[in-house]
Amino acid sequence: MSTLSRVPTYGMQQRSDRTDFYIRDKTGRPPLTTPHRHEYFQIQISLGGDTVQHIGGAIRPFPRKTMAFILPHRLHVIPHPEDGNFVLINFSQEFLLPHLSCDPMDLEDVSLADAPELAPFRFQEHLDFILDDAEFAQVEALLQQMRELDQNRQLGTGLMLKGYLLQLLGRICCLYEEPLRELSASKAEKRGRRDAMGRVSTYIREHIADPDLTLKDAAAAAFLSPNYLTHLLRKETGSTFSELVLERRMRLARTHLINGSKPVSHIAQMCGFADEAYFSRRFRQANGMPPGQFRRQHRGA
Picture (cartoon, rainbow, N blue to C red):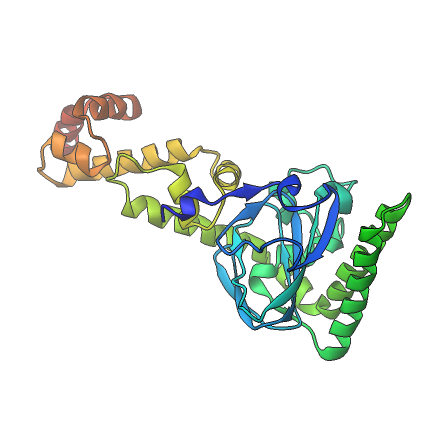
């Protein structure tokens, strides 16, 4: 878990030769073989070598002729076998969606009607994009055209690259229209967020006694970036991570005070407070009275 809590986040300038659009094969630069995130969109296309992809909290198959669509800030990794080969496309939100001004962390909430090109990215954790020979041959032709254009940039090249990219996304949306629409109708991305929140809650519950419980470690346990978890908590609960942890600790403290006989110092430790005086001060702020008085009052009631 400590390794996951230090997962790096890359910008386009760190992993691409250009900051708008970049396409390469495995010879372009060494692949990332440990979990990571990036601030841009990414598409990976497997040309050979069966493996899997870890994305968010899901593990999906990634054999030859498979495409992976990765949203910004999504934790992922694809282990590359020795005989594996792939094409990778990086591009910015401004390149694909210049009309869309929303925060990259809110892209899952954009409707299919407003941005159908986002559909494969939004539902990658729920769907495998494995093509047949004919479909994959068409994709390879588009990839070749993009690579040739990107190597010889001229005025208008960016527009042509975007056109080929939209063709690629359009083909996938057409091929997978039915499952994509079903996933959208069932609000699958919200299920994914609920699952992530469940992983966060489980991690907090299991580590509530640890005074060093951190946002980074909780985010890693939920396969999220710390920034995305902060964003998600505000959206789903209206609270910060610190506020959520404190609320859980106060709830646990009240339970022990009412139903047990352990001394306040012991309860403080069980709730993640190394200092009893600090625990008592926070408890009084949250409950209007110190722990001892709370215990006497509620037991008397």
